Image (cartoon, one colour):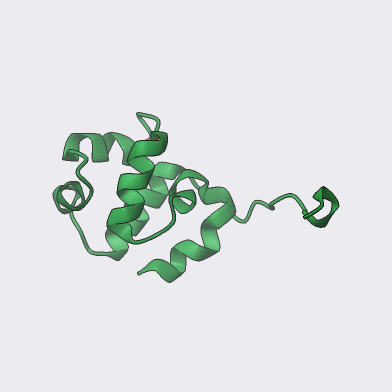
Length: 89
């Protein structure tokens, strides 16, 4: 494919990674402890992630994406994937 066939992604919403994690968790009606069990990330780090106190990183994004059943890009780049978040639950 040629570069000219691609267009830059457009921002759909202003939302943080932490807000996406919390939103997905609440859509599943999980506590932070339940998400910790599903993802293998301890609940203290879940809290830090939801409050944007730590960077997510690729490994954590993959763990959370697997737990939620979504692509990691939805978590890592929420401003570009906002419409898909609503379809997850």
